Picture 1 (cartoon, rainbow, N blue to C red):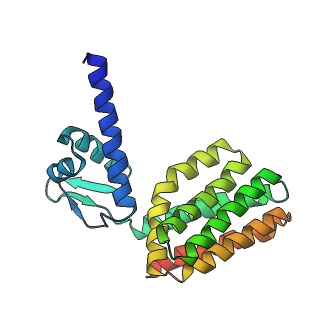
Picture 2: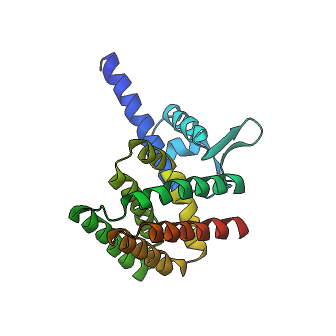
Length: 218
């Protein structure tokens, strides 16, 4: 194999290690406080420690793991300050998004919103918390995508994985929240479709305030 082929293979391994390890952290297979070993991860993923080390460096930069000579590698618990910041950013952006979108959704966008909410209903019925959490994140990203503001969408995409893990923790701790979460999304969508921007903004603010309040007081 030539030099370019070897380089491409190393890149693929680094990306695979990153994707697989991040998934295990997001789904809390590796829960906050779990200590990680490069050697054990290399054995688990069937690769050398080099791509594992690269993946861990990326995850450290994204604040999902902490690496120190004293403690080693540990999956981070998000601080209360980080959680508050995440929800404050969402409230600022998403209230603006829904006020701007109200009454402007086309038929294809309405169909996508309704399909997402129907998926949430099905996930709620079978208590599939991971699927409900994924669809929750998709619902909020859909709204930003519909607005077609690239900067807002980039910010929300950058927050998506952190939000997924935070919301997954919320819904696992309060499974009864699955049903009310879905109903709140449906009410926000209805207000948007009917052009009631102020109502949609109030609803999404209350929706996000609940999550923020629950997470910082539990």
